[in-house]
Length: 397
Image (cartoon, rainbow, N blue to C red; front, side, top):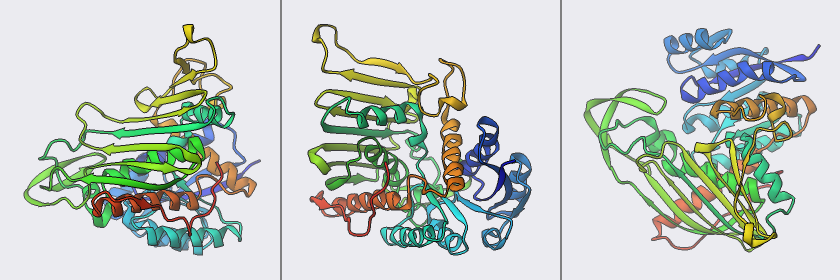
């Protein structure tokens, strides 16, 4: 009989719900070496977290996250809070010998990310594992794109082109929720969306950004204060407050190996709900992906006869495609939630095998270093800014 992996979840908002559903599902979708147990959930509001525990199958609930770390019957701490709490919770959990899954971006500041990475490195020496929650890596079509690039199918990498477009705060009267406050979120579209495409550019190519020039903008500087918030929605009150994060960020970058890259992240693109798009161009072809068509990958082979050349649409639902051994027959597509289930699968298998899961905290620190360089460049009139590398470790692609 497989053993049990006892999970403590911190946070019960949008991401808390998604992680709860993933923990419920993963042990039913695939045979695992350890069976996840939804042991306890923590949140700031005692009444709300009790409701969440009942709705999502957690055995107990508390309004004190520290109590989860003190418990002997919890093996892994899953952090889904706003970024302001990531560092404190992760550091305490690692020191207590708990495995850690931390939502992205890793922290609110580069200093916090460095401290978390150092703690994760020390914990790993004691057999304690840690991982950053970049869930889009677990999209089968993107994992397939990574395999094609690694196999050399597109040749020498020359361009990376990535955008992440949403529109949920385009209305200037949308309330001032926590994602629009620097003290809780760390940054705006840059950290919320840009972190994902920076990570994916590295995941697909294995090339890190070495320097960049950036521009950020806050289009709506004042909003009504929120009287309530849930997920990406909220109710507005009569009082108003200042927006303290960016609404959009754009930058171009130099990458290891000579490739050049462009990135755009905005929550002001009307009609774009979750358009995370990335394209990699090489000397022998290209791969292109759009999350709004998440089961599809476009692949162009430039080595064949040009008379009949064109992008091939690959429906990434075949049993041999990444992660599809756990899911449905060909043509029966997956959804957003499946990326989190696949993430939990990889984490559980890594913990059971005693192997470091990916993306590591070191890879999360790399992304944080890029975000910090973007903000530095934007503050300095888009001046060219090197990405600090001294404290990062090589991650495993």
